[in-house]
Length: 331
Ligand code: SAM
Image 1: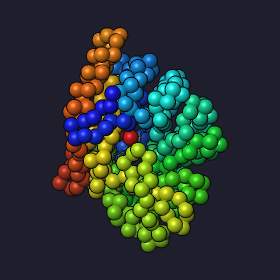
Image 2: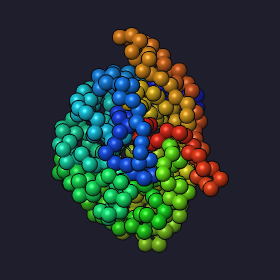
Image 3: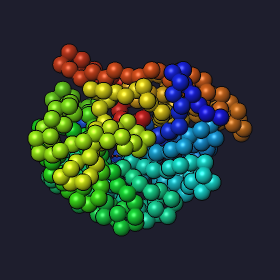
């Protein structure tokens, strides 16, 4: 029952944004004054479980919960626990999540108990003041406590940092040493033009080719074939013995190997992070108790998966490539 798109790519990875709300307001992600999806349009946790289960029956092997901040969705652990049955049955290879870490101290133990093995924690700086400035609402000490708790619970952590020119570029060597010293991989990400924010993205954008050249003045980076199912390309850092990933949606989008689709908390399926086209799965989900309508709506959507995206950030292109924020589709 594999899902294969028109370009022969097998879709085996689902990302689910369980809420578009977040307890941070990262400057490159959201405007300070955000309008969120109406609560009445939200799928219930039971509906999200049913949708995910249909995707798993259709060949999804990896499932990532994201958002918004997944751990601020009320009763989210109920969904995690329910989904963990697919790990036990062997239908799902991996259940994981991407989090800002603010609520991890509370949930790390339970996540591990549900069979979650590794998580991504987004962290753009180790400086408490800069952290507060970039997240607008966040506090670094809470995230650090979350990271401690997750490691104590045995979860493997990969840190994700969005590379921001003039903000964290000079700090990344220190972050690399710190992350690797604590046994965590670090991945850097190019900022993408998604949704209106209060800032000019051209001021923030840092091509990772430049960052890599900069890091190579201090570190020996060797390309390695390590893969986690995502779009990162990894190098090994000789001086630290750790792994550094590069996610380069701007300079090299790797769409040819895209294996994923993204579901929002209102049941909208996006077949590409960088395109507007979407399929509504909420109507077929609610139209009947059986899953036939839903399954054919998914097939129809996969049949429309585009070849890829072309994000552009430059002074002439002032509009975002897609109107929705990253928090809607999920990172
Ligand atoms: N709240 C969770 C978190 O912070 O990890 C999950 C959702 S967040 C939208 C997922 C990831 O997307 C984060 O690592 C965030 O830094 C990144 N992100 C948000 N907006 C972005 C943008 N415009 N370009 C690149 N990455 C972005």
